[in-house]
Amino acid sequence: MRKNIFSLFMVLLFSLLLASCGGSGKEKAAENVYPVIPKPVKLEPQRGRFLFNQDTRILYYPANDELKQIGGYFSDLLKSAAGFSMQVVAADEDASKPNTVFFSLDTTLDLNDEGYLLDITTRAIEVKARTPHGVFYAVQTLRQLLPPQVDGGRQVALSDLSVPCAKIEDQPRFPYRGLHLDVGRHFFPKAFILRYLDLMALYKYNTFHWHLTEDQGWRLEIKKYPKLTQVGSCRKETLVGRWRGEKNATYDGKEYCGYYTQEDVKEIVAHAKKLHITVIPEIEMPGHSLAALASYPQLGCTGGPYEVATHWGVFKDIYCAGNDSTFKFLEDVLTEVMELFPSHYIHIGGDEAPKDRWKHCPKCQARIKAEGLKDEHELQSYFIRRIEKFLNAHGRDIIGWDEILEGGLAPNATVMSWRGIKGGIAAAKMHHDVIMTPGSHCYFDHYQADPKTEPLAIGGFLPLEKVYSYEPVPKELTPEEQKYILGAQGNVWTEYMATTDYVEYMVYPRACALAEVDWTPASEKDYGDFLKRLELNLEHLKAMGVNFRPLDKDAANTQEKQKEKEQ
Image 1: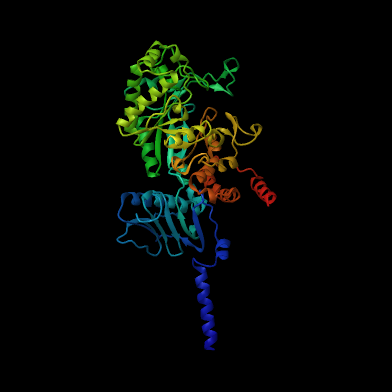
Image 2: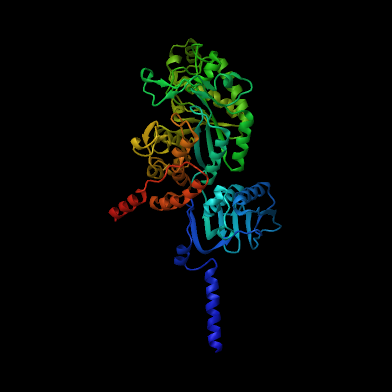
């Protein structure tokens, strides 16, 4: 009898142990799913779930304003869905407690500054990281493990407000993980920029490259030069359909205007900071500058008249490199830009600058002679170096498109390689930092499927799988040279994206694929596995009302068939 009672007791005890986190691997995998993007470096599934309730608290140690802010951010995420706010409290010791989400910093951890350890049990959730950045990214992982309704701010039954148990060790492969947005061709309201940042944070992007000036519009208020927004932020009309040359062009006849006030920018930069995103502004020079020339004609080689461009393309009128007033203007503009943007980098463009006007401009030719330059390409290098020297003197560094390699690279410049990978390879071999963003894999203005079935785009073909296949580190580089590859960036040029819905359609889910390229070790990537996680993960975007492009119905099946063929 005693033996039977003892046996029954042991069976019950064993059953209770299995009900908590820590059963066998097969049972763990069968019970929980982990649709996290980008894929964590290491994820060990566990049985059971941590359930949030009215008594759950967020603790942080040590007392740290950034940790407190992250705690408040996480509490706010759950507030609408839960119907209550979790209390955020500084802990008096480095130890988790039952029914808590515990954040702590430990500089001795064998992780980089954006890495984290996440331990989810039925008892508590514990996050450890070297810096607050890592804690924030752990919260994004938790966010993706929560019911998708949480991201839609909709009420969730308390019994469903939970996350699956797991042990996660995670850190990004690259320090630069970027998304770009062109607001020059089409302007998007402040509310959308804030939303764009929120979506970036969900997928652990840490850099927003904001393309603010263009031939078709100057979008940033500069106090010293009010005509930039009075004149340069408006074009008289806009091209309808594809640009096929002036003879075949049709215009809508409607004035198109828009710009961000400095107060708008301050709000956006502050919001990005809370999301651990750096905003890098781009002020284009010497090309793509018609909106500025229309505002201040003396900055061009011919003196005008100029007008803000109404169609897309590359224009011959650019800033005059022989005119000292051009550099005075740009230094004044950049001074205000630096006051608004605390980023270490300032992007100065440098791409698609035809030299036609410089060849026939007496001032530019005099500059070439006075500086002992060989030709107009070296004049562009002089232009970039002069701007770089000014920015370096203010503690900033420049990024430029790969054309800044022509005529000699500025001493401290970082190169953004867009015309394929050759520019990136050349810059890395010269021991310059590089951000890879080739049009072949990173241009989200390209078609995602047969153009007959898709909205109008600029051209090209970049399906989801091709984005996912990208390897940012060129095989031509030595191990030492590979260290100069900082990461990859997705570019969103908006010639044919007139609405926020269309931007979202073109960016997502391709940005999910690039996020994994930037974060996850190449050896851990698997497109079939990515698709399975993505299908579940997109429910979060759906809950947020994001107009993402639906997955092709046969995408997963095609991947499985391909694997069968390979076997």
